[in-house]
Length: 109
Image (cartoon, rainbow, N blue to C red):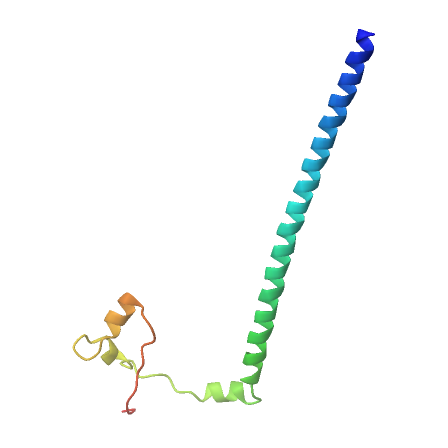
């Protein structure tokens, strides 16, 4: 009789262990599914952003774009040198601290 009781206890322990293991596996599956779902949502959002960016860029295209680019003259070798002169602008300071937008205005020489 003592053997039967021990077998029943072992059976209960085994079933309990299996149930706990099953619950852990199911919880891990849900965690993995949640992570996958989050990654897919992020990827979909990124895809939408790329599509929007492509749509904006597409509006900038025109038939003669390559011919127009070929007509652009090379810049003079001293173009924008004045921007790097400390006594004329604060451009270098702005580059060092990278705050906001550096706005250039004035007449073209």
